[in-house]
Image (cartoon, rainbow, N blue to C red):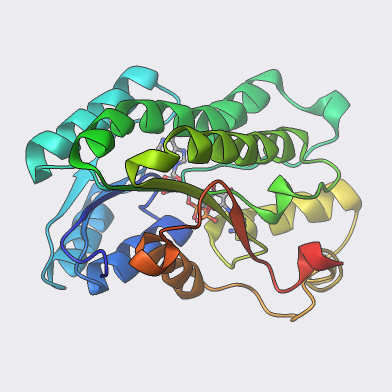
Amino acid sequence: MSAEGKVAVITGSTSGIGLGIAKGFADAGIHVVINGFGDESEIKKELDELQAKGVTAIYNDADMTKPDEISQLVEDTVNELGSIDIVINNAGIQNVQPVEEFPVEKWDAIIAINMSSAFHTVRAAIPYMKKQGWGRIINIASAHALVASPYKSAYVTAKHGVLGFTKTIGLEVAKDNITCNAICPGYVWTPLVEGQVKDTAKARNLTENEVINDVLLAAQWTKKFVTVEQLAGTALFLCSDHAENITGTHIAVDGGWTAA
Ligand code: NAD
């Protein structure tokens, strides 16, 4: 059985990976709640495109730094779409600076958005999933949940935390027909990575081309950026019945990065 007809909340889905997953899910007949910041008319355009695929698509503006708004996102989803079956914790930001220069407010924001928001969505959604006897939680972590890179202290910390959280929740709800897994992508060409190219060039005193070839794709053995479509496909697999016994673990989609 596929997840057709289910309701998915995808945090941070006005752009990049989240939007790619929303599109892949809508193509598979899954109703979607998109979330994140962005231009109102752009968001409206994305919603129209998602709805044109024949599913219900709504937007919720919850700020992933705010626990109350995250609980409300879950409540609004159930009130407006009838259930919450799938949660994709995807919202994330990055900051690349040596630790002694790392702004405290950036550290706090990265821990809140990239890690704690997953706790808040899961905490609010699990009672509904238990009641209906089905749920899928997918945390978009990173290769940086498994290995580190310099100058990304907050990001690497948050992503390692997300993986620990994933394992814990996988165990807690194992008997409730709810699975919790992480997807650990390598470098995906999205606005987040585009922004990092500039920052990394500055932090490491390299050209932007050198950052792409010698830093970003240096560890990606396939020498290809991961695509958002590949990540949507991985998430759909984790929502399918074939993945019923996969829980508390991660799937690396990183071109071999973390194998080396
Ligand atoms: P992106 O910048 O394209 O998208 C990030 C999304 O998060 C946007 O929709 C943005 O509006 C939203 N967001 C940011 N702050 C928010 C907040 N406070 N509340 C709600 N939404 C907020 O980034 P992306 O590359 O698509 O990254 C998505 C996720 O994938 C992140 O968790 C990132 O760490 C992870 N990831 C990305 C890559 C990559 O190479 N791009 C690799 C591994 C993991």
